Length: 357
Image (cartoon, rainbow, N blue to C red; front, side):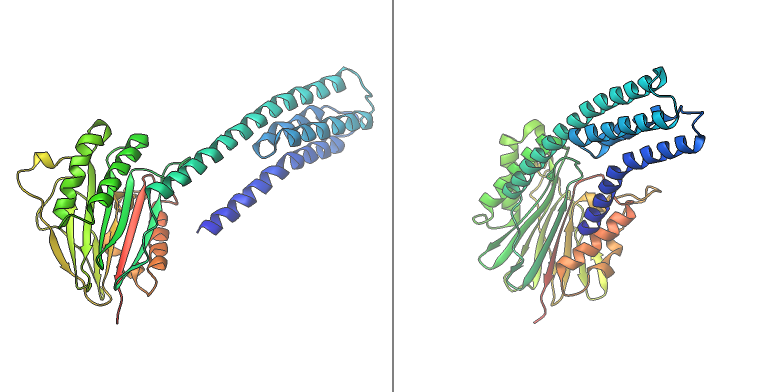
């Protein structure tokens, strides 16, 4: 998918480079066909330098303007009008448009450099904030995909992590309420609290309580977080789940796919003080070859043109096969197809598969 996008982008850039010269060729040809007695089309050669900043830098734009002036002078000679006022006006028009185009091209180049810098910072921040998850813990294979909807950055309010603890796997997939830098800061607080508590706390409810205390003291503006936490026991026979207001994971066993709904509803992290009881885990069986998909609402709330949500519970056929990473590729291809090629919210998907022995 990324290779196809890169190929399309390269083709579009090459076309944008060629267009100004094609336009000037068409104008010059039209002037020649109009005959020597007309000679009024040469000012349209300014379309060449006007279009140049779309793909060319200042030097290329100046070159395009020079070609336009040269063609204008040649047409003036061909039309037999020499250098009267009409030819002077045509050249002045082209020169003025070229100057404006050079300024526009320089501004575009500056913005592109700024965008490259922003993306470089975002890449570093993503590597610090969102660690590479292990591909295998015990008998469980793991794959992960994350896509930010932001145009200039690659991180957002969705978060995830997987940690191996004494042979068991503990994981979190969560979504911070809101967007922007405040959401990223809250995501960092949640991940730091999870990584700090995951080794010492006896169960998922205790980890959730630790995260809530951190949110209370550190999260900006009272942000709350929907989260699903899981613990896959060492022998891989079951998954313990704690759902804090998050979309339920999809459990696939053989040909059957169902949402692993919690027995009791639980409030998002950061809103636990509104509840009256302790958070409770629930357990799902996890047999040989079983799979579970954890995801954020960037996937489950992706809409098509009619406004219909993506039906996660019906995507079981996409998540088969031996390679969990290939399964996630198929899932995201299907989600993007459903959404018309672009997601409007950050999305994360974590896929775990119990190996057959």
